[in-house]
Length: 188
Image (cartoon, rainbow, N blue to C red):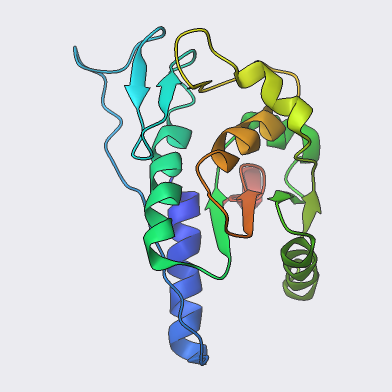
């Protein structure tokens, strides 16, 4: 689950070498995920940094709880675009395997630029939908939103969850769960 953070570190290493004339802010939401008596449990309701409440339906979807707060935090930098990178869902691995990352974007120009960059770098992605109908499963009787919506379209509903915390900025989410690492003889 640290591959998204490692990707951000890799981006900054490349930026240091290339020294482009742009401002880039990288944020890495890091925390311990240790079970104890104070750990979240199914049925808990937590409050995000944005003030939105989240009903915990699945404790295996804990990464998005940290990621939603860093998306909220990112707004203070007034970004031109906002891109998050995360090994977010096993559902994306089922959908795309280890060949392409899932790309979700609120902006067509940003999506096109990321698709083109992925082709050039041989780090392929595939754009998936963000239709509002996918957010239906995230509705909660006890909070503003649930942290999961079930198995169908799991990578899409995870992206719809994150989208709630982005604000008005053009945003893209890269689900790299299938492409972040290799296993078997080529592992690494």
